[in-house]
Amino acid sequence: MPFRRLALLVPLCFTALAHAGETTSVTVPKEELDQLIAAYALVKSQYVEAPDERKLLTAAIGGMLSSLDPHSRYLDKDALAELEQDRLGEYVGIGIEVEIEDGRMLVLAVADDSPAAAAGIEPGDVLVSLNDAPLAQLDVAEVAKRMRGVPATALALGFRHGGKGEVRQRDITRAALRADTVRTRMAAPGVAWIRISSFEGRTAADLAAALSTLGAGAAPRGIVLDLRNDPGGLVAAAVGVAGAFLPPDTLLFSARGRMAGAASRVTTSPRYYRGPGEPDVLAGLPAWTRTVPLAVLVNGGSASSAELVAGALQDHGRAKVVGTQTFGKGSIQTVFPLSQDSAVKMTVARYFTPKGREIQARGIVPDVLVAPAHGKSGADGLALREADLEHHLDTTLPAQGETALPARPIQRAALESTRMFGTGDDRALAAAVRMLAPDLGLAHEAGALLRRLGLKIEASAGALATSL
Image (spheres, one colour):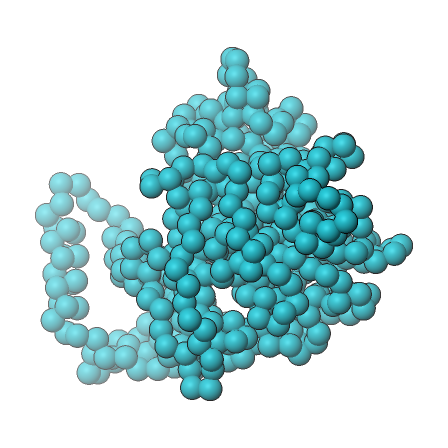
């Protein structure tokens, strides 16, 4: 996508990049523009210290976008680099996944052969400081920003082993790492548990590889696709994941917006998940992947692309959805470059499931509601959802020809820690296993089987967790 600078035209119109090289002229109100310029001049001339001009203007852009909805924002050089890392499925860090639990920065998982593993960091450790700065007042996003950086640079990390005892200090060198978003375990004899923690550049290919490995012998009797605490990510990756379980050219979702080209119907055709010159990662999949009994796990942390996949599999009758109602982020964001190192990420359309159900502020309601055994309390003891966010988009009416199913009341549940997934307390997984293999007995047997088989329980990054 080419870079263009905004060009001031007469009378007070801006020509900006709209879509795929197209331009559009937009009239702006003169009075408000004059106020913005006057405010800028006042700050420049009267503020107690000389302000940073670039910071003033980027903050103005950021404020404008933040007034639209929770997902539109200004992207600086660092944010653009992070988006590119997500597209490639890579990041620079030390190889840990963290989550805030009871006010503590808890290590959920440590990547094999990572700098963190070499330094002795283990799941269950609690991070205390970063480069001698305490982490108590920082959220996960800020910690991620400070912990990521340039390969071969060092950071000083303070942590308590197991969350107890003296603070240990380690100097750890950052490295370029591959994001591991797909993990597979056998939840019970013949039933595979596939967890997708987010949708990134390599997710569809990694899923295809995992499915091929599962089918190396006999096909599994069932698959549990776990999308809990999956915050979403790349739409192309979600199309690839859905395409692994649905026939080719099956409708995945429709999108509607004001921008030219925003209204579309996206299918599982390779052109929607394969980039130019890239191989079709689903081409070699065995036929059973599109017919094997399937259950999808979701919760209030399942958002965006995760909701697209769950909604499509549910609408087509391909899978039963198990868990609690999803987050409700049913909007599409597009990145518009402003310069070589800045861009705008802006909401341009809404998602609708194949049957015309709107996801925005509603989410996906499971076929089988299963509340978690334990949860983490939010401000009101329940998980926040899209409908709770300031400036969220309201729901809208279906397009002509689409069937709008009645909206169901939001079923709220407590926030879930990813540490609970796959344990003996994992009610949703146990319910899914019973559904797929009823001869295995009571619902709690799935967790018991995991423990008896001695499988390592791995927490995955999601809406509550971040890879660092």
